Length: 159
Image 1: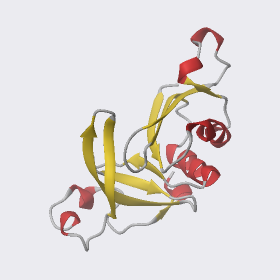
Image 2: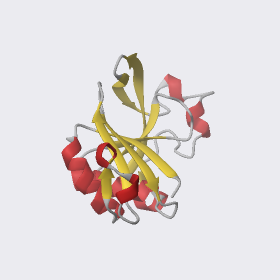
Image 3: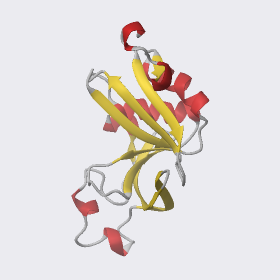
Image 4: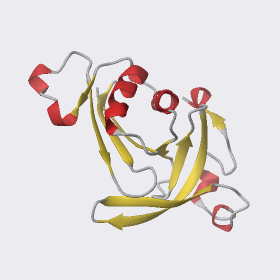
């Protein structure tokens, strides 16, 4: 149990995230604030959910997710259960580029402006990653990504 997942959700109340995540994972999910390592149920996943500024301000950290779980399939299930768009980082190491996972089960690359605040990074100004935008054309990290500009992929096939 070594996996660590970090996601953002579009306007979800933390109290709704825990049960939805438990259903998506098929495991007990324990909030970090009350997780006692000596009393954790077997196969429990520890999760921290909090609010941050900006778009997609609901932050989710999952600790101890089994390596056998597929992150994309799990986040697609979570997006569907919450009926909310979710974000995860992509493979470009660009702080402003993320993968948008929609409740309908699609994944597409998007960009945000990232601003540092006293309460953490704030995302704003969402735009699609597309070759029609000058920042995604030519020499760019976008073109070397598994998630090419203008791509729309089914989440479960990508898992």
